[in-house]
Amino acid sequence: MALEYSFLENGWVVRIHNRIQDMSLEDKLEALELLRKNVVVVWKNQKLTPREELDFCGSFGSYDFADVAEYWDNLPSDQQDIFIKEYPGILRVTAKPGTNGGPGHFSHKTELKWHSDRIGHPDRRPCVWLYGITDTTGSVTNFTNNFLAYNALSEEEKNFYGGLRVSHYNTRYQQDSDRSTHAWRIEENLIIKNMGIWDNIIVENDFGDKSFFFSPLQVGCIEGMSEEKSLEIADELLQYLTQPQFVYSHQWEDGDVVISEQAFSMHSRDAFNDMEKRYLHHIQFNVEKILPDLKYPGYNDRGHLV
Image (cartoon, rainbow, N blue to C red; front, side, top):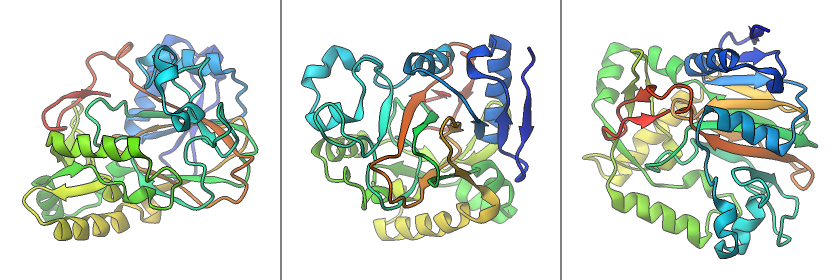
Protein backbone atom coordinates (compact mmCIF):
# COMPACT_ATOMS: atom_id res chain seq x y z
CA MET A 1 0.00 0.00 0.00
CA ALA A 2 1.36 3.40 -0.98
CA LEU A 3 1.71 6.17 1.56
CA GLU A 4 -1.46 8.24 1.74
CA TYR A 5 -1.22 11.77 3.06
CA SER A 6 -2.60 15.27 2.80
CA PHE A 7 -1.61 18.75 3.93
CA LEU A 8 -3.47 20.59 6.64
CA GLU A 9 -4.98 24.01 6.03
CA ASN A 10 -1.80 25.88 6.91
CA GLY A 11 -0.15 24.27 3.86
CA TRP A 12 2.90 22.73 5.52
CA VAL A 13 1.86 20.26 8.22
CA VAL A 14 1.42 16.75 6.80
CA ARG A 15 -1.27 14.29 7.92
CA ILE A 16 -0.50 10.67 7.06
CA HIS A 17 -3.55 8.41 6.70
CA ASN A 18 -1.86 4.98 6.87
CA ARG A 19 -1.85 2.89 10.01
CA ILE A 20 1.60 3.10 11.53
CA GLN A 21 1.84 -0.68 11.96
CA ASP A 22 1.23 -1.16 8.22
CA MET A 23 3.92 1.17 6.93
CA SER A 24 6.64 -0.40 4.79
CA LEU A 25 10.24 0.76 4.59
CA GLU A 26 9.36 2.71 1.45
CA ASP A 27 6.48 4.39 3.30
CA LYS A 28 8.81 5.34 6.14
CA LEU A 29 11.35 6.82 3.74
CA GLU A 30 8.62 8.92 2.16
CA ALA A 31 7.32 9.98 5.58
CA LEU A 32 10.85 10.94 6.59
CA GLU A 33 11.20 13.07 3.47
CA LEU A 34 7.93 14.81 4.32
CA LEU A 35 9.18 15.39 7.86
CA ARG A 36 12.47 16.80 6.62
CA LYS A 37 10.74 19.31 4.38
CA ASN A 38 7.78 20.20 6.62
CA VAL A 39 9.07 19.59 10.20
CA VAL A 40 5.72 18.24 11.52
CA VAL A 41 3.90 15.02 10.55
CA VAL A 42 0.59 13.94 12.13
CA TRP A 43 -1.39 10.70 12.37
CA LYS A 44 -4.92 10.40 13.78
CA ASN A 45 -6.77 7.48 15.39
CA GLN A 46 -3.77 5.24 16.02
CA LYS A 47 -3.94 2.27 18.39
CA LEU A 48 -0.42 1.34 19.47
CA THR A 49 1.20 -0.67 22.20
CA PRO A 50 4.36 0.71 23.82
CA ARG A 51 6.31 -2.01 22.04
CA GLU A 52 4.90 -0.92 18.67
CA GLU A 53 5.83 2.69 19.44
CA LEU A 54 9.44 1.76 20.15
CA ASP A 55 9.62 -0.62 17.19
CA PHE A 56 8.44 2.13 14.83
CA CYS A 57 10.87 4.76 16.11
CA GLY A 58 13.64 2.16 16.41
CA SER A 59 13.19 1.19 12.77
CA PHE A 60 14.52 4.65 11.88
CA GLY A 61 17.46 4.66 14.28
CA SER A 62 18.60 4.91 17.88
CA TYR A 63 16.45 6.52 20.56
CA ASP A 64 17.28 8.21 23.84
CA PHE A 65 17.72 6.28 27.08
CA ALA A 66 17.47 2.94 25.28
CA ASP A 67 19.48 1.25 28.04
CA VAL A 68 17.70 2.83 31.02
CA ALA A 69 16.63 -0.61 32.30
CA GLU A 70 20.30 -1.57 32.70
CA TYR A 71 20.93 1.15 35.26
CA TRP A 72 17.40 1.54 36.61
CA ASP A 73 18.38 0.99 40.24
CA ASN A 74 20.87 3.86 40.03
CA LEU A 75 18.38 6.39 38.65
CA PRO A 76 17.12 9.10 41.01
CA SER A 77 13.55 8.36 42.05
CA ASP A 78 12.19 11.38 40.17
CA GLN A 79 13.72 10.04 36.94
CA GLN A 80 12.23 6.62 37.55
CA ASP A 81 8.82 8.33 37.55
CA ILE A 82 9.56 9.78 34.11
CA PHE A 83 10.54 6.50 32.44
CA ILE A 84 8.84 3.15 31.94
CA LYS A 85 11.23 0.41 33.02
CA GLU A 86 9.70 -2.24 30.75
CA TYR A 87 9.88 0.06 27.71
CA PRO A 88 13.14 2.03 27.94
CA GLY A 89 13.09 4.95 25.57
CA ILE A 90 9.55 6.12 26.36
CA LEU A 91 9.08 9.15 28.60
CA ARG A 92 5.82 9.55 30.51
CA VAL A 93 4.40 13.04 29.83
CA THR A 94 1.77 13.37 32.54
CA ALA A 95 1.03 14.22 36.15
CA LYS A 96 -0.12 10.65 36.79
CA PRO A 97 1.97 8.90 39.47
CA GLY A 98 4.86 6.77 38.25
CA THR A 99 6.92 4.01 39.85
CA ASN A 100 7.60 5.99 43.02
CA GLY A 101 4.34 7.88 43.13
CA GLY A 102 5.74 11.04 41.55
CA PRO A 103 4.64 12.75 38.32
CA GLY A 104 5.91 12.16 34.81
CA HIS A 105 7.74 14.58 32.54
CA PHE A 106 6.54 18.22 32.48
CA SER A 107 3.57 17.56 34.72
CA HIS A 108 2.86 21.18 35.65
CA LYS A 109 -0.47 22.70 34.60
CA THR A 110 0.99 26.00 33.51
CA GLU A 111 2.39 26.77 30.08
CA LEU A 112 5.47 24.88 28.92
CA LYS A 113 7.35 27.59 27.09
CA TRP A 114 8.99 27.41 23.67
CA HIS A 115 11.99 25.10 23.45
CA SER A 116 13.73 22.49 21.29
CA ASP A 117 14.43 19.19 23.00
CA ARG A 118 18.02 18.97 24.30
CA ILE A 119 19.18 21.48 21.69
CA GLY A 120 22.52 22.11 23.37
CA HIS A 121 23.35 18.46 23.98
CA PRO A 122 26.05 17.05 21.69
CA ASP A 123 24.34 13.64 21.45
CA ARG A 124 20.79 14.85 20.87
CA ARG A 125 18.42 12.91 18.64
CA PRO A 126 16.24 15.56 17.05
CA CYS A 127 13.18 13.59 15.89
CA VAL A 128 10.50 13.70 18.60
CA TRP A 129 7.53 11.33 18.81
CA LEU A 130 4.45 12.26 20.86
CA TYR A 131 1.55 9.82 21.21
CA GLY A 132 -1.68 10.76 22.96
CA ILE A 133 -2.75 7.93 25.29
CA THR A 134 -5.62 9.17 27.45
CA ASP A 135 -7.49 12.38 28.33
CA THR A 136 -5.58 14.57 25.89
CA THR A 137 -8.61 16.37 24.42
CA GLY A 138 -8.48 20.09 25.10
CA SER A 139 -4.70 20.27 25.38
CA VAL A 140 -2.62 22.05 22.75
CA THR A 141 0.99 21.64 21.62
CA ASN A 142 2.45 24.27 19.30
CA PHE A 143 5.25 23.83 16.74
CA THR A 144 7.28 26.34 14.71
CA ASN A 145 8.55 25.97 11.16
CA ASN A 146 11.98 27.58 11.24
CA PHE A 147 12.51 27.02 7.49
CA LEU A 148 9.58 29.32 6.73
CA ALA A 149 10.82 31.84 9.26
CA TYR A 150 14.28 31.93 7.68
CA ASN A 151 12.94 32.26 4.14
CA ALA A 152 10.84 35.27 5.18
CA LEU A 153 13.91 37.24 6.33
CA SER A 154 15.36 40.09 4.31
CA GLU A 155 18.80 39.55 2.78
CA GLU A 156 20.27 41.92 5.34
CA GLU A 157 18.73 39.91 8.19
CA LYS A 158 19.94 36.63 6.69
CA ASN A 159 23.47 37.97 6.56
CA PHE A 160 23.32 39.25 10.13
CA TYR A 161 21.98 36.07 11.72
CA GLY A 162 24.15 33.94 9.45
CA GLY A 163 27.24 35.36 11.15
CA LEU A 164 26.19 34.47 14.69
CA ARG A 165 26.94 31.42 16.83
CA VAL A 166 25.17 30.48 20.03
CA SER A 167 25.71 28.32 23.09
CA HIS A 168 22.45 26.69 24.20
CA TYR A 169 22.70 25.93 27.91
CA ASN A 170 19.95 28.00 29.47
CA THR A 171 16.59 26.71 30.72
CA ARG A 172 14.44 29.82 30.82
CA TYR A 173 11.65 27.78 29.26
CA GLN A 174 11.49 25.65 32.43
CA GLN A 175 10.96 28.44 34.95
CA ASP A 176 7.39 27.36 35.58
CA SER A 177 8.20 23.65 35.47
CA ASP A 178 8.24 21.41 38.51
CA ARG A 179 11.52 19.95 37.21
CA SER A 180 13.47 23.15 36.52
CA THR A 181 15.41 23.05 39.79
CA HIS A 182 16.22 19.34 39.94
CA ALA A 183 19.92 18.77 40.57
CA TRP A 184 20.41 16.44 37.60
CA ARG A 185 18.96 19.04 35.19
CA ILE A 186 21.14 21.82 36.58
CA GLU A 187 24.20 19.58 36.38
CA GLU A 188 23.51 18.67 32.75
CA ASN A 189 23.22 22.35 31.81
CA LEU A 190 26.53 23.14 33.52
CA ILE A 191 28.21 20.29 31.65
CA ILE A 192 26.91 21.64 28.33
CA LYS A 193 28.05 25.16 29.23
CA ASN A 194 31.53 23.96 30.13
CA MET A 195 31.88 21.98 26.89
CA GLY A 196 32.14 25.26 24.99
CA ILE A 197 29.95 24.15 22.08
CA TRP A 198 29.00 26.93 19.66
CA ASP A 199 26.18 26.29 17.21
CA ASN A 200 25.50 28.30 14.07
CA ILE A 201 22.20 30.13 14.41
CA ILE A 202 21.60 29.62 10.67
CA VAL A 203 22.29 26.12 9.34
CA GLU A 204 22.31 24.80 5.79
CA ASN A 205 21.60 21.10 5.36
CA ASP A 206 22.88 18.73 2.68
CA PHE A 207 19.90 19.58 0.49
CA GLY A 208 20.72 23.29 0.38
CA ASP A 209 17.87 24.27 2.69
CA LYS A 210 18.64 26.96 5.28
CA SER A 211 16.90 27.40 8.59
CA PHE A 212 17.21 28.70 12.11
CA PHE A 213 18.86 26.25 14.48
CA PHE A 214 17.91 28.30 17.49
CA SER A 215 15.86 28.07 20.66
CA PRO A 216 15.66 31.55 22.25
CA LEU A 217 14.71 30.46 25.77
CA GLN A 218 17.67 28.06 25.85
CA VAL A 219 20.27 30.64 24.83
CA GLY A 220 23.10 31.01 27.30
CA CYS A 221 25.22 33.35 25.20
CA ILE A 222 25.76 34.48 21.62
CA GLU A 223 29.44 34.42 20.73
CA GLY A 224 31.17 37.75 21.24
CA MET A 225 28.21 39.35 23.01
CA SER A 226 27.34 40.04 26.61
CA GLU A 227 24.69 37.90 28.23
CA GLU A 228 22.38 40.92 28.32
CA LYS A 229 22.74 41.58 24.58
CA SER A 230 22.49 37.85 23.81
CA LEU A 231 19.17 37.54 25.63
CA GLU A 232 17.90 40.73 23.99
CA ILE A 233 18.47 39.23 20.53
CA ALA A 234 17.04 35.89 21.71
CA ASP A 235 13.83 37.55 22.89
CA GLU A 236 13.48 39.46 19.63
CA LEU A 237 13.84 36.22 17.68
CA LEU A 238 11.36 34.46 19.96
CA GLN A 239 8.74 37.00 18.92
CA TYR A 240 9.69 36.56 15.27
CA LEU A 241 9.79 32.75 15.16
CA THR A 242 6.43 32.37 16.94
CA GLN A 243 4.40 34.55 14.60
CA PRO A 244 1.13 32.82 13.57
CA GLN A 245 2.27 32.10 10.00
CA PHE A 246 5.19 30.04 11.32
CA VAL A 247 3.25 28.13 13.99
CA TYR A 248 1.06 24.99 13.95
CA SER A 249 -1.14 24.41 17.01
CA HIS A 250 -2.07 20.75 17.46
CA GLN A 251 -5.42 20.22 19.16
CA TRP A 252 -4.92 16.85 20.83
CA GLU A 253 -7.25 13.86 20.71
CA ASP A 254 -6.46 10.42 22.08
CA GLY A 255 -4.77 8.27 19.45
CA ASP A 256 -2.95 11.18 17.82
CA VAL A 257 0.72 10.82 16.90
CA VAL A 258 2.84 13.88 16.14
CA ILE A 259 6.46 13.62 14.99
CA SER A 260 8.42 16.84 14.85
CA GLU A 261 11.91 17.54 13.58
CA GLN A 262 13.43 19.44 16.50
CA ALA A 263 16.57 20.68 14.78
CA PHE A 264 14.56 23.20 12.77
CA SER A 265 11.50 23.58 14.94
CA MET A 266 10.55 24.48 18.50
CA HIS A 267 7.50 23.47 20.46
CA SER A 268 5.50 24.65 23.43
CA ARG A 269 2.45 23.48 25.37
CA ASP A 270 -0.45 25.65 26.42
CA ALA A 271 -1.59 25.68 30.04
CA PHE A 272 -3.89 22.72 30.81
CA ASN A 273 -5.80 22.21 34.04
CA ASP A 274 -6.35 18.44 33.69
CA MET A 275 -2.69 17.41 33.68
CA GLU A 276 -3.38 14.76 36.32
CA LYS A 277 -5.42 12.93 33.65
CA ARG A 278 -3.61 13.85 30.41
CA TYR A 279 -1.10 11.18 29.40
CA LEU A 280 1.26 11.12 26.41
CA HIS A 281 4.32 9.11 25.46
CA HIS A 282 7.49 10.85 24.26
CA ILE A 283 10.36 9.24 22.30
CA GLN A 284 13.36 11.11 20.94
CA PHE A 285 14.98 9.26 18.06
CA ASN A 286 17.37 9.38 15.13
CA VAL A 287 17.14 8.05 11.55
CA GLU A 288 20.59 6.63 10.88
CA LYS A 289 19.30 3.12 10.14
CA ILE A 290 17.46 4.07 6.97
CA LEU A 291 19.26 7.26 5.94
CA PRO A 292 22.81 6.93 7.27
CA ASP A 293 24.18 9.73 5.10
CA LEU A 294 21.61 12.38 6.07
CA LYS A 295 23.60 14.97 8.00
CA TYR A 296 23.05 18.58 8.91
CA PRO A 297 26.39 20.41 9.17
CA GLY A 298 26.68 23.49 11.33
CA TYR A 299 26.55 22.18 14.89
CA ASN A 300 30.07 23.30 15.72
CA ASP A 301 31.09 21.30 12.61
CA ARG A 302 29.95 18.17 14.40
CA GLY A 303 27.87 16.97 11.45
CA HIS A 304 25.12 15.52 13.60
CA LEU A 305 23.05 12.75 12.14
CA VAL A 306 19.39 13.71 11.89
